[in-house]
Image (tube, rainbow, N blue to C red; front, side, top):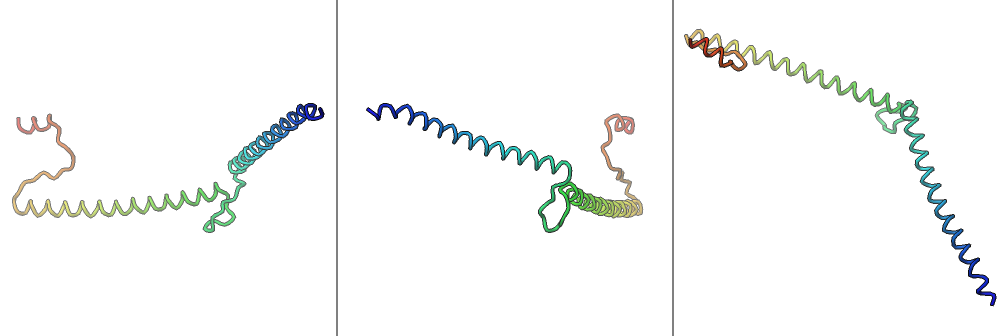
Length: 124
């Protein structure tokens, strides 16, 4: 007779255990969310340090600035290189044009596409 009286208590205890387990999982999720929120806040304030040996003790934003400055310098170097190449090509073009003129060959070496109206004016 004592066993039927214990069944409601066993159910109640098992429900309490299930609720306790759910609370623990919810608490873990809340702590994880809170931790990532705090990390984002520190990151936006520039307080979070980056863990990279090439940038010791710099915040993420400072390290990002250093990386971007390096990329800007790389782009500037590439622009300078392309300008040198462009000057060389222009010099070669001028040299070829002079050679053709010396040989008496009339050639138009202008870059770009001639419009159809310019062609008609030239022909007409």
